[in-house]
Length: 326
Image 1 (tube, rainbow, N blue to C red):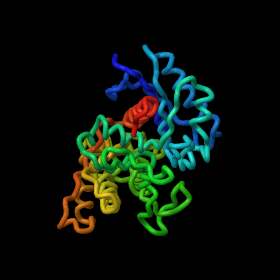
Image 2 (image 1 turned 135 degrees about the vertical axis):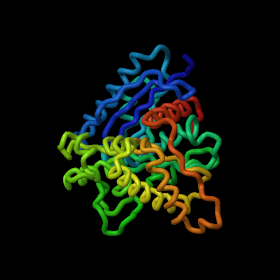
Image 3 (image 1 turned 90 degrees about the horizontal axis):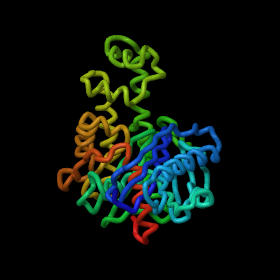
Image 4 (image 1 turned 45 degrees about the vertical axis):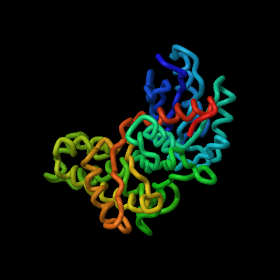
């Protein structure tokens, strides 16, 4: 095994994923657990993070240079503070310092989408492109911006929160406290809710989804809808097409603002592949200002899948411990 090793932890709204990662981005050991509920205390979630790190430290066959945490929320990476996390219980939580007190290894804390974006730039679908916009679709929407090959965090470290740009004034309420946010129309959660509505409505269009959830709509997830769509279920294909169109409409704003050379779409929902990305590209080309007179960046699926966040967090932490990083 090559080194130095680093541990990356991706703290999402649904799952907590962690892995021991080498300097080529390979995950050597991995562990996945459910994220404690949003209604739990900050300390409970912190304990869960410490637990997976300690487990991986014990399984490492060599020294670990650093631990990187990617958290789903607003993160002041310079101070290592989780400022606000819509899907997690942390508020102005000094996570880096608290973890440093409990772990005998350097700790870096950043936004989870920043970590995923950095991983795709270094090891995945963004390799070779110096100007990237990375959009991650999971419980909500995260984002990362890479310019001239460097991760852009903004003045206060809060850049890339694409999911909370308003898509529909007065629209669906969002967990951030506002309404009509983009992530309320494009995310794995949205796909799951659309599938549940189909099952509740009943009839022939819902037959495939009804079988997947055993007749209980509450059990249906976005993963079920994606699976049914990939198997050819017309109703599920239509759900992904509608969500893909909303994805492209939102990307038009991202591209207009950033002018990236490529857009990488990651997160769990990206597993839908072309069923999601094809309508997204069409909507992006249609809605992008001056689309007929400019180069429209390609929209591609992330390559690193669900591991991107932990791989990027580990690589950023390793770089910081060694004086480099994003």
